[in-house]
Length: 620
Image 1 (tube, rainbow, N blue to C red):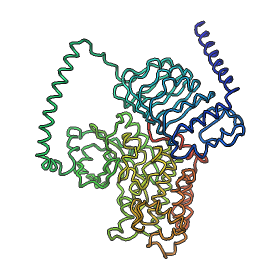
Image 2 (image 1 turned 180 degrees about the vertical axis):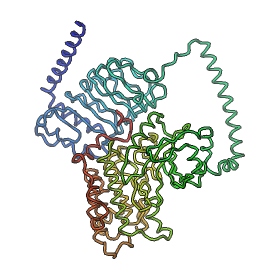
Image 3 (image 1 turned 135 degrees about the vertical axis):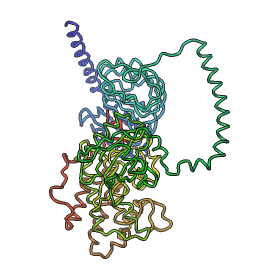
Image 4 (image 1 turned 120 degrees about the horizontal axis):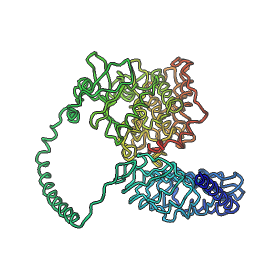
């Protein structure tokens, strides 16, 4: 009992000593803090000009730095920095050593930038009193500095999504206050530290080549002895020589038989044949009213996933149409390879299966067989908005205005619900006219919501965004190309592009009505016409002179607001829905009881700070 009391008293004394130190620093450092921020601004490249325009040092009044973007002070009238949060600012450079002059700093967030080089070995001297340190989603390399263990007040330490190598310092176990610790997606090896007062999940260490120890797999004892090393070396040498010989042989083999290989999989379902022996696996269904189903039923319904059954192609996976024996039509999406464990996948499915809304494609069930992940959806007989809208390219009839407006309002309602009312709230991240499906009554249904979390990390990167539903470049918000941060306002931009597609009839990356000299995309063309007060030239000719000119022009103005270059200037998705609903009021597409009510004013803006491109940050 005495030991417990002594320990408790010591903890109180340590905390008191800490706050005395902070108070001591607060009595100084006003000019030092100004110098600290000036040094950060001078040492980092700022391609997006976040700091250039916000961090203006010409003002000399007390507390002026407290109004800088990303800066919070202990008191708004004093230049004593408490927190620096520059996440997603697009900054480039090495770790700013000028931080040592921010002597009162407790929270530092430099995540989701382009910082590189090693983390300073003396970092504990630069930010001695920080309690939260987030350097995740950068390009830091080298070893994790041992001196981080000297920042004894750390509660949160995030180093994930970098290129850090070597071992995690074992002395980190001395960080007694740690509550959140993440080093996932690095190049780390060796045993993980043991924290006494908190349990760090395996996800916090995931996607490293050689980490081991609880909560991961136990570490294997290293091989010992010179003889073992000699044997291993000899074996490696022999295998290398053999591999070279095999490679030469395989080169000529593949060269000789490459033409034949193309015919090995004429039905495009070689992968499905590997499921032999798993056909009895049950399909987990979310709807009790849906009949029980097995993998064999899905395979029969899709002709063993024959390529002729494919009705959609995309970065998230191919979609097959299936018809059950009772005539029921389904859509089956074969997800591309995912690094998520079965447990994580089932957890995600449980979440997505509970997400229900009139304007979402119903997820009926899922199936796991070997490494395959299959999602079962209700079939949408009228296909995608993209195909219906651009059928006119093949001589089809142009879509009527009332139908375009109905689809826009319904889709906006679905996206607004995902952003504001869904629990958990979901940023779609991959909005396009291909992810908006149409049911038998042409009611819009949003597909692929929540699937971004199931993709491999590399597939969420802009470099993989090529023509396809998973991030056609014509839909990607400009800020995402710099920050790789997914936000609600990024969704608004993508949906704004869909609205422009609806009102102009043009494709997002190819504008047929633009001059031959124009090389930009649909948004750039619209912005050019807007500056020239010629927006009327962009409207689909099939809509002009039909008595709806005023509605069409209001519609294109809403779309233009959605694709403004500055995210803060764009409306929220709920506001977009309200604007569109007002335009279509005379058509009675919606009823009063369907009106969305956000739980809080501006809560979509709050999500900007909470949800980022790297999914595991949400888990933390």
